[in-house]
Length: 477
Image (cartoon, rainbow, N blue to C red; front, top):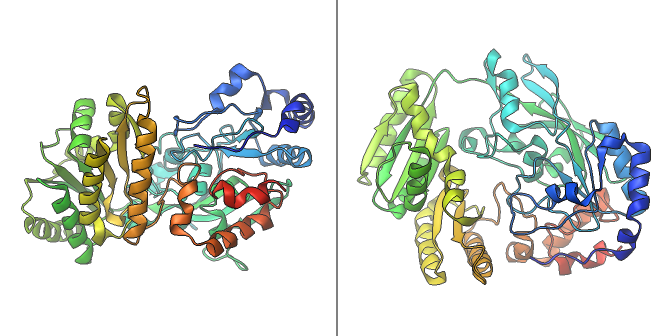
């Protein structure tokens, strides 16, 4: 994955830059020792690595602004970093960049139950937002698979979703406001604890901007009252295509489950060996969860059972107890860790129309066979957010290149059938060179003009999102 060469003038001034940062920040906020900065050389797309010039770990918005002002004056690129769980290389640094990590900024700043919002520092982990309010009967809806570790800042940067986004939406549907620090060190308050802020919808521009426009330091998030009840079912099939067709029929029928998750045989086997959830031996399974009052749950599951019956499922398992519900979800929540136990893999993130699921699953199978690399599928089927896992051997010469080529073909297929390159992982460096597949030159130019407004010198995450050849003149100043 190509990255621009580092600026030798910045490398030569490393000591001066670090000294200026230490002059405005407490000493423990700045890391420049090579052994310590190695921790920040990659994110969860660990196939690509590069040690940064230095790392800054601020504890508040004022320190973020001070660090950015120094880097802006020195012309040093800055790579914002939440928890480093990005699967698209969104927080991978360059050799001449300062990584600005928000992990120490994890406080709850305000909870307002009457207006149903919580304000947190953006380094707080996703799951701990719910932890802060669940004792009072509330929760934060977006739930990425990495929610135990991923930070709210990264969720906002990539517009993350999760298993329950079918009903509750992704981050943008649950974000009310942010505190944003621009590259020049200006602190902006955008949105807030109310439904509709006046003026331009800048919040909609910030969410999903992948650290290109500013550094989010605080976030106001919508919290919801816990539903009266919830119940999952597991539906097993002898064919991935048939499972995909069942998903399309459920959505077509107007039923709105809180989640519809898909797993195929390679993933099922791996999760069984890893988590022992008790899944059936089948080609594919769906986990469908509905919620509400008991009568409402019974009515929805009755309709889902009727729809599934038309596709001749191998098994239809309805959770009767809390433990059975937990076990139905256990394998799905363990899927990515389980696959990592058996193989190197690259996790993709294309989104497609739900009606195209059978065709896309069939064609991914054909592409996998042609490339000679296995593909395991586990994804949010209800909204068509695919997560094919391409298995390869990092120690085998040429295998990573074959994996990348197959991944590119799968993402091109997603665009071909009317979908897009990413649903929640972002573009980062992984899909950067595929942007021209989805967007024409005028579209890319319009997007880059937005960045021009917020970051005229192109110092924030400059080698991400846009193809290098397209952004070269701007990055050169």
